[in-house]
Image 1 (cartoon, rainbow, N blue to C red):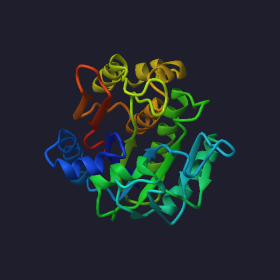
Image 2 (image 1 turned 30 degrees about the horizontal axis):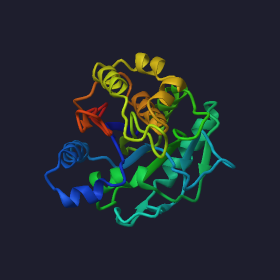
Image 3 (image 1 turned 135 degrees about the horizontal axis):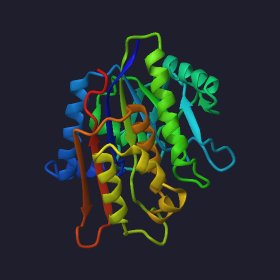
Length: 276
């Protein structure tokens, strides 16, 4: 049977690849390298990534709360950006199709996507963590950007359901789980340049001590809105924690830049080898 072997959480700022090329010693590079080392040590066969679609695959006319990628391959980023290389990735289609069916039988009204276009939310993490793109990915999209958002408890339950699917899947694959997203971020709105540092610190503290139930309870839609219009991406982390169970991180770091008047907050986490 398949099993979860590692969980990691990272941000996905689209400017990170360019910044890393300009300053190879930047803290952001060190954080990604730490996470990459843990991921490589776990030797996953599949990378399940909880991610957000930035209106590349979906828009308000068709906007699922949860969508499983079931394509054979995907590429991107399908955005206008000079900061990212173009990548083609393998998709674990059989895994995704099985998850879609299992989810529907488990009373999760999942959508499925047999055609995928990837954006920076998926490809920035992969750029740093698996730049050769040799490990098939299993993207699970959670709507963290367009209101109404799915509630945090349902996202946590989604993670539980995914874990059950992995453990009953008729394959001996080792599955690494990635959460991609920001905890507090405003894009193109009136709060651009501001970070809810208190909320970021609260989220990190709860994750550090494995208090997922408290994190879920406090991650109300109202709180996510207060933290910025892109802060619903925390739901990706909450789904990952549901998949990992009650594990505590072996590495968890948050940075605010600049410290005096934060313009961005970057959180990186590793949840070690879980059941591997």
